[in-house]
Length: 215
Image 1 (cartoon, rainbow, N blue to C red):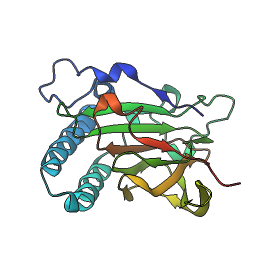
Image 2: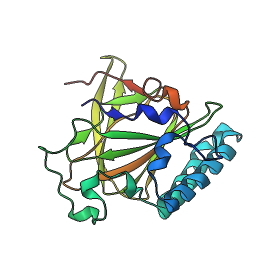
Image 3: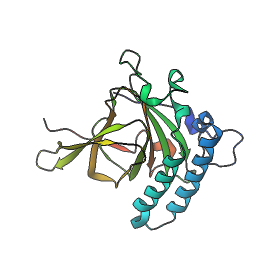
Image 4: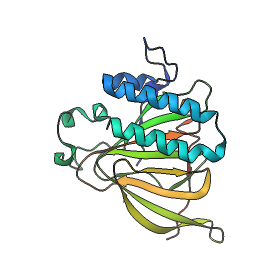
């Protein structure tokens, strides 16, 4: 399915001094905004560090963020104020694609942060990555299928699958070493936060490296 993307998020949130905050940040409550500001500061510090330290710094930054908030303000209106474990999103009412919200866009193009709201049976395509990326599930649970790249067939082969639970952080460098498919097979809506090493304007085109899958 093609994800829905909030294109208005490329403008800055009015009235906020942090130039990294994108317009979708206006959807967050004050506590969520504080956590996002702290994440922005951590990513600024990480951007100036040695690339070899990137994975560890992202793990710390995203773990801290996930411990503070689940970004429930981004849930569809009918879900707000309810326990996510009690939310049943029928396939008839689910959006055709998962909803992405650009929350941080570094003016220097060093990173961006995108929150994704996943309804039941919404999945990403199978993809590698044009850039480094890291993500953490904030609430609910996702399923991740990993794939191995085969040079002979020039296609990805299905490997292991695992549940991704809140507060876990996953990281991969650019290339075909981290091919995966992420999605929500559960009746409860889920939210995840993804940090990419590209500008906010490039998220739609410079992150996912779509690949053929061996059948």
